[in-house]
Image 1 (cartoon, rainbow, N blue to C red):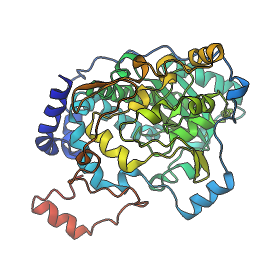
Image 2: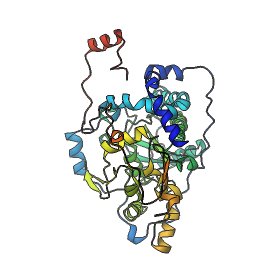
Image 3: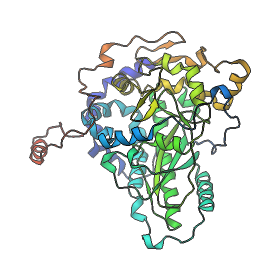
Image 4: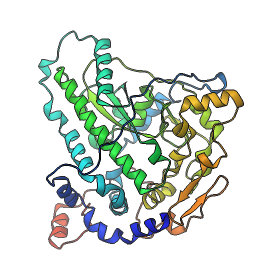
Length: 429
């Protein structure tokens, strides 16, 4: 059934190229009536992890970074929005997600539109209250976030080096509030599947809705606030690390102690005088170095086992050229999320097992490492990986240059006009 579903998805991609365009998706968003998607059942706001890192697992708070190298990299080559840099890849990618995206599209697109409008409700700068107590305001903000059902929030200094060049200067202040919402546990264990992708998008929609309410709360206190889109105007993983919400895993994702990377992130910039949180060492880097299950289980070997410095940050840099085509064509893939023991069991349980036995909880067991591969419908236990056809890694219709660092030049206005008049689709995305 898994394989038949995968085959059906791909057979319907040609007609979905007509549906999955911005103009038609906006029409779906604006249809009258309530959303037919059931509200997401969100876990209770997170409690702080109870266990600290063992001495042999300790590394550094947050992540190893070189501030001078980061400044130099930013000066030489600012970051650009991936969706702007690779428009041809986005046009190819969009119809592949029809089964996961269309059922949640109305709610998600409405939530995105609401985030884009948050700054319209900002109070005049002169109305900012004088003498606000930062510690009390921060405590009240976090209490409000818990009331709204956000799993966790953290406050980090806003850093223009980690905002994409296309959105520079849009921040509402010098602070970034990182908002995290946990993704349903059971659906995530079914990766890779369209159902899990739907759960992820529903989580994003629920997070954006809550963020809009949190931004409104800040505005009611007299402060500027601007919610950002989940697609990312900034690199939220950086802010999550800086705010002490987790550490960077070998899989390139923010691993939170409570749920690993089984969560969704977005941010709110504000001028409210909130107290900054700080990076923490939870022992996650030490666990990753001893685990490396995601490195071994990645179907295309896109995750390196060794961290190296990139733009001043020491991390395992993923091979996007191998990862992106698989993620697009195989229901979002995300096997690196599924097989992470911190995601499945939580960091406390992993640390407890390591202290008792010196072993990583679940490693080398089918319960953690096994997965079903939609392309052939087979189950792959530890020690076995699917054979990947070259057409999956390098689809002939995908024109994708992962080395491109800046958006391509905008086409001339006349070319756009001619394309629209002749009914062409080259620029439809």
